[in-house]
Figure 1 (tube, helix red, strand yellow):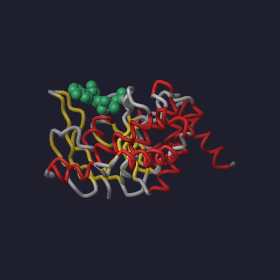
Figure 2 (figure 1 turned 180 degrees about the vertical axis):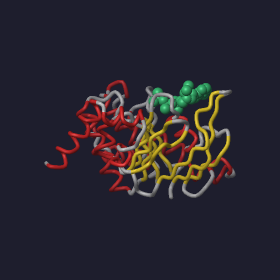
Figure 3 (figure 1 turned 90 degrees about the vertical axis):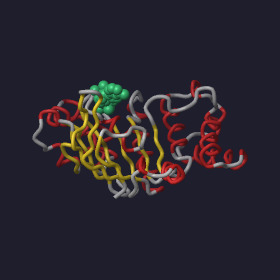
Length: 257
Ligand SMILES: Nc1ncnc2c1ncn2[C@@H]1O[C@H](COP(=O)(O)OP(=O)(O)OP(=O)(O)O)[C@@H](O)[C@H]1O
């Protein structure tokens, strides 16, 4: 088990976002996390990566409770996860390669020469052309920015990757390419992936299991077919509305090709 969440409560004043929430994430899987707006997907992600101390409950990441660890061990555990946030993924004043070098120098203490070499390896890994390395984020397309941010999240060879809506704002072709890249990287690097998304195509093409957040809990976490058959109004609307049907049909066609 890579992530184990037990009896998690998160509240902001009187606003209860999570209550008695449980979730397991298994080694090597891509788990898609979905739910209506405001159901607490980002708050859950932040609680798991240690950016937010839950109101109560426990989160274990790779068997350890991040927030209970002494500083040194906490830093070591943090290095084993990569995070790609939806916004602010890259420093705008640094080039793509400098963004990745910075993570390697600051967090792993690498020399500039080693960091520079490794940064070029990571950029190739995510399919960015060498010429992108010297560009600033403002000079990149949306798809390239996501890839560069992914290269930075992978800089320290994490075991677990957290992604917050990675395909939001991408055109369908760039989004599909990103989904394929994710599958390739998971297989090549043996990653476990926690993926918050609204993108039905991503769920159908890339996720092994899907967790639905509703009613302050994980309503269901299972294979897509089981999740889509869950008796819940939001689930039925989401998976069987026009967009859900289109994504399902596209996935079916892709399987036959
Ligand atoms: N720092 C905070 N202070 C107060 N309330 C917060 C804070 N962070 C999140 N919330 C509230 O918690 C709830 C869940 O927020 P969260 O961003 O996790 O939702 P989400 O499921 O990721 O939504 P979306 O799909 O719209 O991104 C929201 O009602 C939000 O207003």
